[in-house]
Length: 290
Length: 281
Image (cartoon, rainbow over all chains, first blue to last red; front, side, top):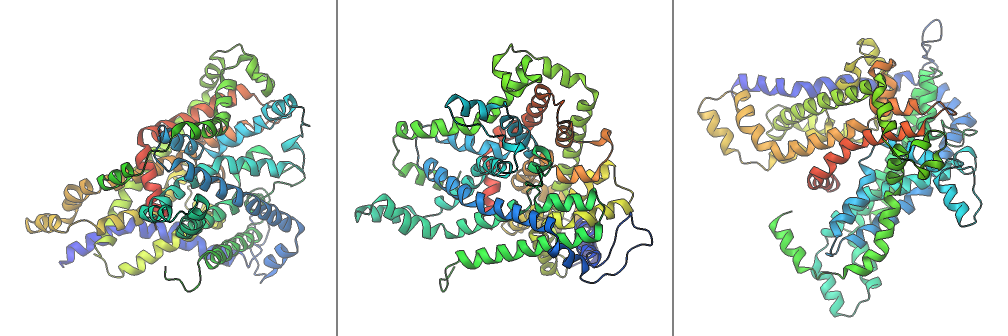
């Protein structure tokens, strides 16, 4: 290879190299270092090395545990519903029938709209005199204060998330369903297998990689929930919707505890890795080549 | 959709539509109801005070007129458009260059660099939130368009897509051009870019959708009102808890949704194809 072409190749690689170092590698290392210091622009005398103090502080801080619990409830409470709804929708719109494309597109639409817009709309729907309560009132049910009540604020946001995220995962499930060879179903039908048997013996096992992908992607996304809380509740009432990223945002950018917030960021990163790894172990069948 | 796929699809027996419509129809309406509500409130003159009175009418364009009468909203829209255009352009350019170089293994340590890209993909950006803010501060980019554009100008996933795509392209065209004495840049511009069009289109669309809707980083990196993008502007507009003008907010939300919905309707196939390419990894 001629030398000038290698130089050009490096020149073409350089935008990524620059961005990787400046906006990836350096921040990653900096967060790690900062998490062991008392770094804060508000503190006089600069940053001190404090060892694991920030981590210990986080792990003994009720506010951090509250944020962690809130995020945990969010993840555990939404993912089964989102996954089931997404898979159900995918199964419903997979076979050829008139109007199929309209349904596929329609269910996906919430996924392309800004989360800020969705949050604003749902804030209005959940308002004390809003649409949801008007509907409940019409059928004689009690109308809670939704986002204004610490007991119902988080479930309200979770319901919105299931509602708006399912269409996205439906499309991923559709891809998985398309990949299953159709003659398996034909053979099963000849053997007289019921739909349920076909679903549990063919669809579910062969959908395992897709299921794993959906679980991991959705978990990582759910752990980062922020805009909903910022727009709809401001983390309240009584911190009932303060998620980990919301807590991180507050510590870093309203209280300027940058060292401490860096430790929280690393704890979030560690939790993300452990959960993603755990799900891979759980869903991947042992001893099966795949 | 490929011909083979189409043939297989037509082989699948048609399922009777009516029973499906009976339960999927109401479900779809329920799912899309919030958008209907958004439109109604944005058009309802009585909605500014209470959100519940929107259905009562009378209807008109007042809220949109008020929205576009407010100079700040013009600004938000222009900022969103400018930032999205810049990010999409830079994203497509860098993904094409870097992806081609890596796909053709033209630099030593190609595996190492690819590993770096995959590592970037696994890292949640929120972890980098604080130091990214500090890096931008040190570069004197905070509260400038640079903060809204530069950290997002190079996207690891886009590079990865191009790299995979390049691996499937025939080498002959490039070699023929090289024999003719074309320089690398000429080959890139004349041979590679046209070949990459399909994958670059997918990247452009996805990067537009992501950037147009982006919220957390524009919120953190920018302080001045004149630099706010539409999502940030709308979110902060909504924060006056008791004086929220719902009609105006819903008009703004509708305006914010129209470009992404238009892009989605036009490029629906490519968007779904791009998502599926991601799911298969």
